Length: 263
Image (tube, rainbow, N blue to C red):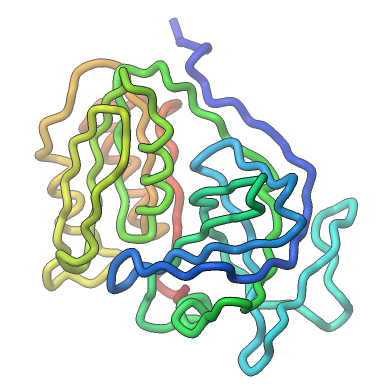
């Protein structure tokens, strides 16, 4: 009989768009920056799950201010003829009292988001929309499996920080070099496998798949998050369901980026 009490719950939020400014910039690793944003509109910001994403609106090259839409009945409404550069990011941390929101940017070789993050300064502007909804996963599974690449690290870090002390998690993350490793803060029992990509192109996940197949995993019911390149996420989902015995209802696979698209 299916354990319906363990099914993720969907929560909808009122869609709101905010114009924010950079308050702090922190180098997490050579290729990861944490940007702390601030603004009066963050007093009512809410994110119910580490799976959440906000839509980030970047200024066009050579401009300081992004185009920020208004919320309409069918979603965002942009000024006629104006559509900004947009990307999705995980709300890493938010503090309503301090009116702060942390986003973490992995610095790809090129792309509008990475280019903006490299040159951002205190006082720079960003537009942020959402989150529109949350998928809340219960924390009563026997254990949790997190599989991803560098782009998933902010979401995984938030997830692990929220797991209760009696939880157990296995984290498998593919990285380009040793400098991307970090210590995850968590009250749970966490086993982390850092998988070096070596000479394989990003998005192929050869070593990541090998590690998922060979890793020693705990027994019992588990929920699995997969967050990497779009096609790779689909392949990993099939792998954990057919080879590692995952319940398809307890697997969430997300494409954080596409091989044909830079961030």
